Image (spheres, rainbow, N blue to C red):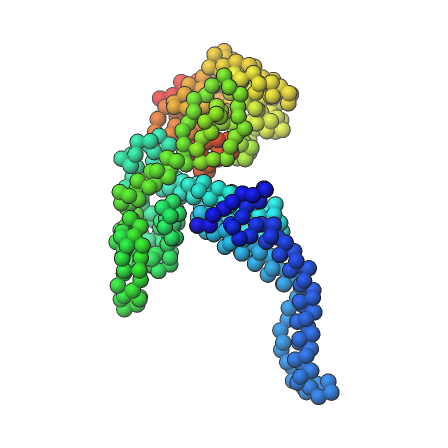
Length: 450
């Protein structure tokens, strides 16, 4: 993998900086008219070579057509693809990101340093973090156990040793093969192994034991012999179209280590220290005592709520008030409770009504139509917050809470409708643990937990 160096705000592979690439691109854009003029002159010269005195010989000579628009489009596409290859982004972009990048190549944005940083900056500046996120994205969709930051601390004994994949029908195994490729590549990126080649993948689909160890798959009637790198996985296919992908001890241990590093630790909430500026990292920032809800998560959660103008909405432990900001723009009447005086003052400066208090010590009123909350993630502390928040709702009111995925898959303390958020939704706030959204409709009979 290339060595990436940050110098003067620029990232370089030791060969070329983004600004160098943009400079070459802009120079060639300016040179397009001259290149086309040369091309046209060459066309005319060829035609003249086939004529005497410029007299048409009643034969059409096809010399090709080339327009400025097509030249500029080809140049723009080349610039983006070259940047992708130069920084070896295929080695640490996740499978989902690779699909998004391919879509971007079909209609690329202007080639500027700012756009390079926006589209590729995370991979260039933090390749290891990108590898960990890609592995987490891939495995979180395979089994709930891989979403649990708590199971990662237990070790491989808490993880499934196989996953069940669909898409291996008798007539077509393309979908299943693509999923296997993405899983093995996510693990290979973490292990520092080359990505799976097409021939290796074909060998695995043909012979499920082909990639357990380094070796050679012998030639047969239709295929040449192929060298393969041991991946520590094997595949069993079944007549119902499913395939079981098994992980050997080393492969499973590497998955465990990678996810442990990515999820990090979950800190207890405290009010003694001021919040530090979040740091982009694959581990939880040790001096960050709360996890403010990223604006993209706020919008994702609220787009499903259908908040009515005039509804009374409570945000417990409101922090800097991001939910209250967005709810107010939707016409809601918002109220917050926050234990930290500095954060409470920050909310008031934006015009919000906020009570400075420990939410668990606030007296329930039963007057709110909704509660929208991001309670502390630490341990099982969130359940106390959710159950207490339900007492602030009117009968028929709705509670929406962002919780760690362990609340859904491990603890079993709360009932309701669950909807998982994408992997790394809280990365910018200092934690990579998987998160989920719980929705509870309060009834007179609901008591809060199991």
